[in-house]
Length: 313
Image (tube, rainbow, N blue to C red; front, top):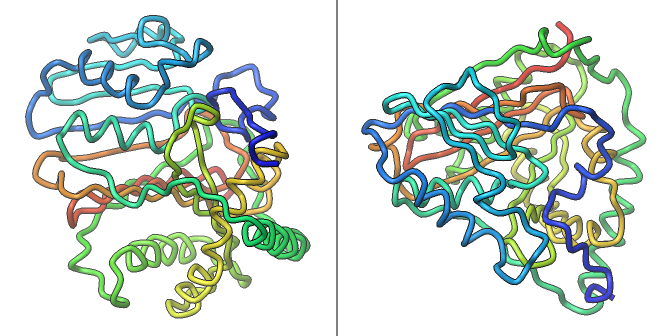
């Protein structure tokens, strides 16, 4: 059945359900220690890696990319780059460019390798069991929506915060990735002053395929501020990633899933890059479907994260 239900459009499934007159742009400012050369070639190479040459419907470099030295001139292209010395500003339509695209772009820009990208897989009966198990989990997860966070009334009220740290300075447990997640979520929880646990969604990047370019899954869990509880929940809910990736072929409910969480925490990791990148700032131009978005990228042992607060104070 998974071979029958193939969504061929190269965009994140949840974005299809967004009724908006404004493109869902991601805004990124990246500062490198040296000026990058051959920007055009690096972006072209990323397009060639990410989009299949066999897909006539995929957007192309020639039709979707605009590169300029003046960021005050918006071209309304799907992928815009503004260069100012060693600072680069990107505006990207999230419907077409996933976290995996950003990681491939980073690899080509800085000659560093992304880690923790999953591959699609299907095991008869086992996969169906995990999908059913996830649906049962999600039924109860949806029921507990008391004291939801209120959204700001307009995009001018959005607050943005950079949080950067070294992984050697945070030692909550043995695994670095869990230390990073716990540190970020503890910071967010301390500012919300909620009596209940936070409901968290962590997107998981999957390798792009001809059927799905913006190919993602997700892990859901509660965060109560206890490190061991967080680790145990994530480990127990790892099956969510493949289950949700499979479900996106059948149903278009990514927006609904994001509506029921407090925080979407996207984490990327590169093997190196701390000696090449000064800063990496990523946020949304407009209000998303969830109140708090945190994008965290680890370059070697340096974590550079941006928290976008779309909730009312």
